[in-house]
Length: 504
Image (cartoon, rainbow, N blue to C red):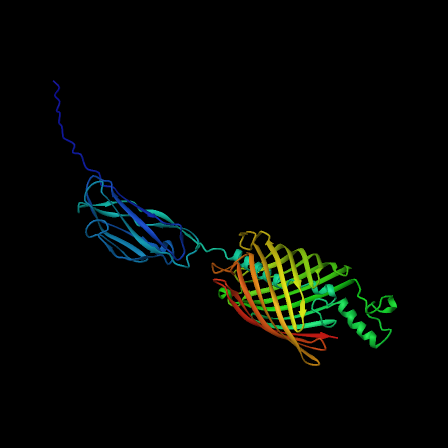
């Protein structure tokens, strides 16, 4: 007989240790260096029982040197009695999740150092630990997330620097558009002797200018020939079959100037130099009409005294012109020109790039000259349009700088009224006043520190002064002006002192 002994013991089910999950997230990165970022923590009880005494640490300085928490400590962030504290090392203690499946969420504000480099930085906490209902230790995971740091989103100043440079040069070029109507009566660019030199002092800068022409030299030679018969007068003497009193139909003229300027619009603190040279050749088709060609060269150099931001350039334009007489004492002129420029720009004060531009100009004037006894009335109306467009280029930093365009369109009109008298035999004095209406139908505002500066579309300008002339062709002029009359947000006042000396 076989006997068997059977026994049975119940197997008691044992609860698995609770699982604690820790996650973390930088919820608003990428973040600029110097800004703040929010770091969010989430703790979840994934076990079957409650847990308490939860704790972990987070070494911020090991993630990114200088990364700091602000606004701590914070209490009761994950159950009563819990706390997170610290600056460069975060410490979380006393966490409580008494019910299975519970979770808590809390966050910390971090200050990213201004010196932080651009990049991605991995932040990892210690392993989270705690107790199972105050009895058995429990363990969770270490949490990880990446912090992305970028450079501050600062607008590239280069386009504004280029645009302002083109706009400044455009205004200087249009202001110096030559008056050509005096050429029709043979007086040359400015009249006076064979070579005229003018020194000018005015608000915002100084200028030294000169002018000469074959016709001016011929007249001087003719005067000398009258006193010394047989002397050549640049091919205009009787020996070439043309009387010295007779005007030659062909003429070459030159006009140039060098100007220093100061510009503090918008506290720009800019100063620099501007120069130009006109060389013209013309032919008088008939007594009341001449045609010609102008070659124009200009150069400019300007920078900011505080930041070394600036630009410089050299350019040229060439084109035809015409001067005619519409009626008794009424003259007109018109010209067009096209050209290019080579420029260098230092937009941040640390490196220099080069770019080219293409520009064109059209202008016209109508001028009257009426004399009645000691009174002179000289009405004049003019229109000019100038545009300068830069080429697109890639700068030293690899950034593509878009093409910039500066343009000025202006219509002006108004009379000059003067009263003259002979003070003594060798001195003539003229007192004058002038009112000018100005309509800028195209005007690109300059942008300085994000603010646009410009002038109103329509305004008036008043000018008054005195002119003294002696028998040797020397001329002194002093004047004052008030600009911006009728404009809402533009006004300018200043004066000019001008001395012209003929070089015989």
